[in-house]
Structure formats: structure tokens, C-alpha cells
Image (cartoon, rainbow, N blue to C red; front, side, top):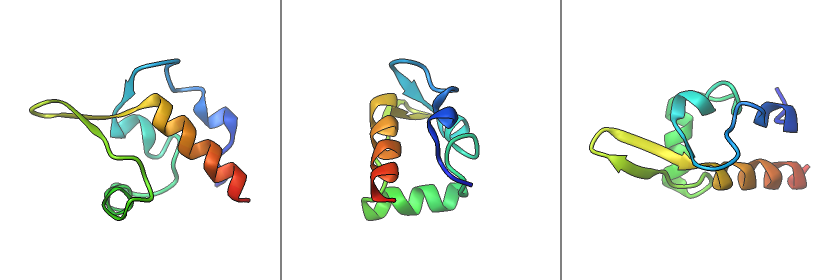
Length: 72
């Protein structure tokens, strides 16, 4: 499954997105793979919005998708 701009439609224009909005809607990998990528620095680090709320900046997600397209 390729990541294309059409996959970005579920993202808000600005703000934050939760893991459930990213997998599998935008990124075709598991939660374990997401966290492994965060740990090794190949995926943006999330932001803690509260004690039980972790999210990613939409701008960071758009940037990683754009970089993914540039690598091909």
C-alpha cells in the first residue's frame, strides 16, 4: 500500500492526530512498528497532551509523508 496525498484527507488542516487516525488509515503498519520507528528516530515523536493522551502534530505527519514520497 503506497502512501499518497489521498491518504492525507482524514487529517485536519492543523492540530494533532491520535494513533488511531494514523494506523492503518495513513500508515500501513502496526502499532508496534510505529513505536519502534519513534524510538529509532525514523518517525516523529508524539506530544503528550494529557496524562493519557498522546498525539502527533499534523505538520510532522505531513512532512514525513512528503519525505517518503521524495525517497521514491
